[in-house]
Length: 403
Image (cartoon, rainbow, N blue to C red; front, side):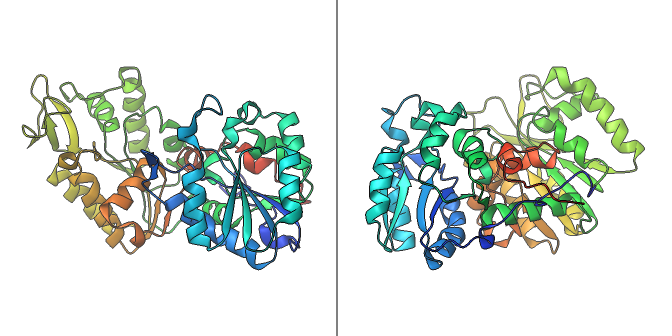
């Protein structure tokens, strides 16, 4: 597997640069969840702090940049980074100055007078149409005041956007921060010489979202655990009646073939054997645990016997990769399977890596996040990396290395 993954090969880190009095353009992933203008989860902000604090300590002039959500125009003020600037001011104990105009003139003037207690944060880069278009014109304006480019936005590195791709291509002094370094080391550990037994736990809504990862991990893992709505496509492939549970009918044939291929490799695959069943996603009172589905019933969580089966495998694991909840965990009445699974993973003695997205949210909400070895901030980026896709935000940083 090591020849497939070049990992961090040819990529410099923030440690490789003399940053004192240099302008460091620091691309971060501050795309935090918000409700009514208030941040509901600070995980992504906190994950950026080691790199920022290192740059502060080394005397850099920092220009931070991030996107937030998917604004259509700069008038979409609900996507302003103002709440993020306030949160970072508190966490860094520095004056984080939110600059609405990211273009050269405004930032250059500010950099000229910037003192050691001040850091610049550019307003949401997606307010500029050139960001998502990977515009060289927009990148050129940013490059005009940038000495060193550091990407620490792993969760955005699968996007070929201007601040991720076009800009670093223009900056000779370019590299990654501590967060991306840790992300890649952890994900490489899932592909190259993982501790065994290695168990991959996959959940969530769709089989189609996980095909690439399943294909990549099939020859690496010792066992798969499948839960969430995607399990019903597999159960239907085995001939089970699953009521009106969510099924990807166009993936049933693939699921059947996949089960045969896993079996041919002598790998274990566990599917739910009991389910929390209800007539409607909004019917929390009428939900009950069943082994068989009635007409018009759907599965919204795994049952206790499934949890016991999954737990026995997890407890013996040397490496665990978890991506995707076991049910509709956002509804408290349907969260027991996912949260109890998080507890079992947390108590395991193996290496425990959570693949971002809903799994990261579930780990946080379950109260066991601090017991995990690593929770990826990546979501889609971590899955793309694991399935062998090249991430534009990493490849542009890679210098050719002589063999």
